[in-house]
Image (cartoon, rainbow, N blue to C red):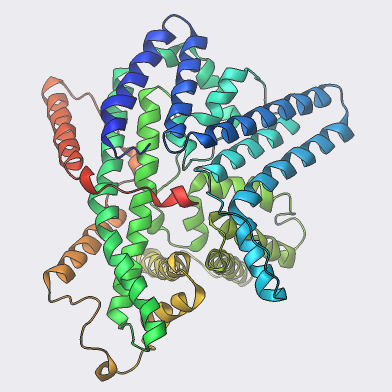
Length: 492
């Protein structure tokens, strides 16, 4: 089920919300069980067959979490370590089969000339997110951070529908106290109002910016693929238009989903962790990764980068750990060499950023260059991020190279271009794209982050005005539901 659908807004959400508070008044267990069942229904709406896979994963990890906890209580260090290694391996094996089996076989066939095949594997929605969430649970249990093992609450922790499909990645200790607290099961009208505001804002990002940008992105990237086979060229301005369009599309698509997730959860008095903090305002690539997909960045830092050694074994090892972490982070997004290269690019950017900081520290160079320096840093960071997004979006590496070359002006002379350009900015279509790009850039660079937006009680008049404003915006968004599309991060 999609957030941007009639059945979610007018049936699933109000019924689930009413049932949650009605049952929660009678029993916390009833309210939690209702929300867990509703979340499973939400997931099964896509493909009921994979509800069994989700439940099997939940049951497996819950049992191993209990065993690790008991081994920890009995001070059986060796046993709990073996249990942790086995359970994490099993989770990664499941993820590898569904997400990477065909990718690995295809590359093996290319290298060896063999012809191994597997039947078509449908990637279960959200498998990367619920797998990482449960790996974090197992590690936290191993470290003695998990204090509650109520099974219904654990099921709800994994399946809670606002985050289940595309995050954020949750930690057990963040959620369990909220599920157990009595006030969670009592309506809070301020939370409901702010939740509706965030949900509406997220829908606005998705339907009014991300989805309208998608056709232009497809036009440019498909044009680059055609150019590979026909010998045509992609103009520099077309390549930049497509790159900026995708940079904004993926931002508004994913941050829009996250706003909807945070807003929907808040209606149930559940606070999910912030996943975005205006990442395109970052003045360095290090800062970018503290602002973009924050929960994934934190997961990779805590459960991959630090266990690899982090920065504890010298600069060379630190940089190697950064590269490994980002390579695997890229591969987590999808089974393709474009994702691996995207991870390698960001890993290299991070290494260069750390090297620059190291040089400045050794030479005692002041890195605060004032407003001009920050603007230059933000511009350089944004250009690096845009170039990496081109690789991330491309269907293959030659397509990505074609667009990157065009962005750098390495295309044939203008008189060799075919008569029909991909995008004519003198046409209405071209002007519409420019307007979308301009509006998107103004949004991400000027407006405050969504996490700072709340529905404030400023007296009856202003409260009513705010309410009508949200309703009017929601009506505009709902009017555009005819062309709704799945969220980009569903495929990851």
